[in-house]
Image (cartoon, rainbow, N blue to C red; front, side, top):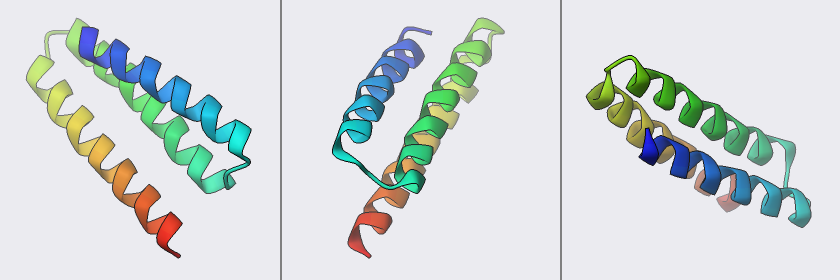
Length: 74
């Protein structure tokens, strides 16, 4: 739960920074999705699915970062 909460805090800070930079709506949506993903991982952990939650968290963040990189390289 702690890692999910820390990830949520980091995504909130990054989302606020992206809002200040005037990033694209798709980019903001990706970070918003990562924020929601962190909340889902906290709930999974609360229900005893810690390993599944960590797998979802890592996979989700890798996909978000990859999508962000692909959007910026266009």
